[in-house]
Amino acid sequence: MASTQLSSELQELSSTTEIVTFNYAELDSETRAAIQQNTTEIKSLMRRTSQDIIHIGQKLRAVKQQLEHGRFRKWLKAEFDWSVSASTKFIQVSEQFKCVNFTHLNIANSALYLLAAPSTPEVARQEALRRASSGETITYSKAKVITQNIKSNPT
Image (cartoon, rainbow, N blue to C red; front, side, top):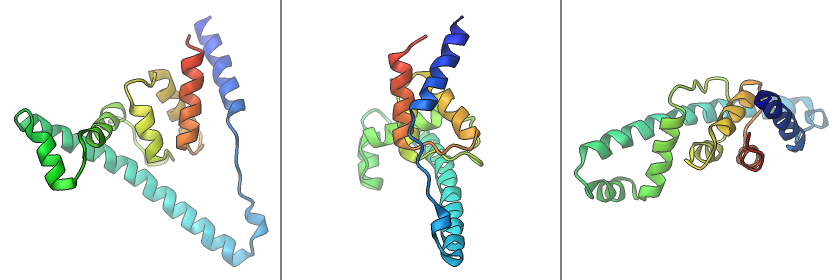
């Protein structure tokens, strides 16, 4: 019963997410090829960046564990001019997505931070990963819709 309800909620979620497309046919062939090449390269860099965020989070956690209480904040400020809040986002992403291979997934960094937040239900993270595995690009807006819909329709 719960599985059936979740399935229908996820179908509803898919139908409520606005699908935006870009019409490459409107471009001349030279421009179309250049734009599509750049799109492919940007998506590749985004996946690499997602993996880099995980590595940064892991290293931040290691440094935090090695420093005495109160020194991590000072180190963050001196080395990167980051807040503890910023470093926490990296660490949360590294914890929630450490086993995910981003090689073929298109998930925006801002979406990763949202999905990794402690307030985000695990089922929302799994739904975003499922959709990304199916080839969908998960933007911050899509991740927010997924999260909100699951929070408003808990199983």
